[in-house]
Image 1 (cartoon, rainbow, N blue to C red):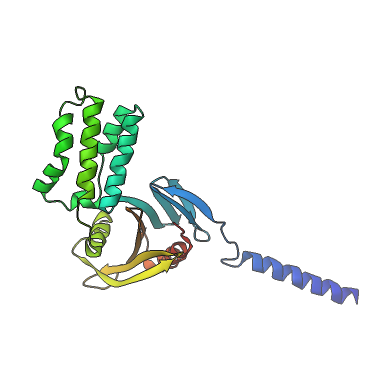
Image 2 (image 1 turned 30 degrees about the horizontal axis):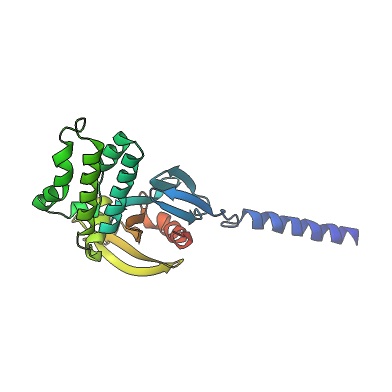
Length: 243
């Protein structure tokens, strides 16, 4: 009787150990991270390392990598918001920080402007900052307000141009094309999901997903590794993201 009981206990212990070692048995806890302008709650794919680089959140397993990152202002609203942040810095007495914020301003609405339109957009600022040490804070403040008005007057960006921008910033070229495109509602946010491949061989697939959040673009993409290594981790991570 005792021997039979001991055998059953041993079997139960072994089963428990096997269950604990089974792939996917250990689930990561949700994490809240700041991805540039976006506060995000997510769950890293099981077994993948998570490296927090601020604007870029890297997830990797061996040679495979998936990246979540802030692509900056994607709409006139986002561009105006970025300029208002510079205005706040100026009013707070942080002149050099305000100048730096405007100097590195980038994003899709600016990229889409033809050169003459871009020069006209920046004119209020360039007129007073060609000698930045001479320009007074009051003149800088007026120039910032003019830039904000210019940003708010820009036309909305089409979805096709946003997709082109995401692929361009991710290093895609004319050798690749979109194989699949979907819209997915994830925790109430409308994400655009894309899969691309080599246009000739239909191999070397990569996945992308992006969402516009308060005027800024949040992008998830597969980077290094074959799709059989990155695909499931990408979709699992995407399904967990709450913006």
